[in-house]
Length: 109
Image (tube, rainbow, N blue to C red; front, side, top):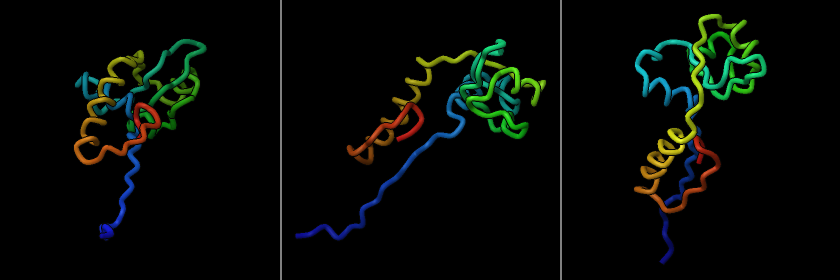
């Protein structure tokens, strides 16, 4: 017997993942432009919140440029251990529905 159910493929890419986790964990950051990274002279934005993106701040942008575009930008140092744990929690949700999961990065599968 052939299964006639259509095959479904879901691609999940959690946009602004690191910044969203920071806003989730620190309510004072909600609604504010946030960049995960370091505001040092040679720093780079690892992730930008949607509020920061309205100013043109995005991932891989030099921190100096990001601050020039958005003087009220709040830099938060990355917490990769937290992002890994949140990623594991999200993958556990996926596993409730399928055992065919192809992780691509912490925020994409």
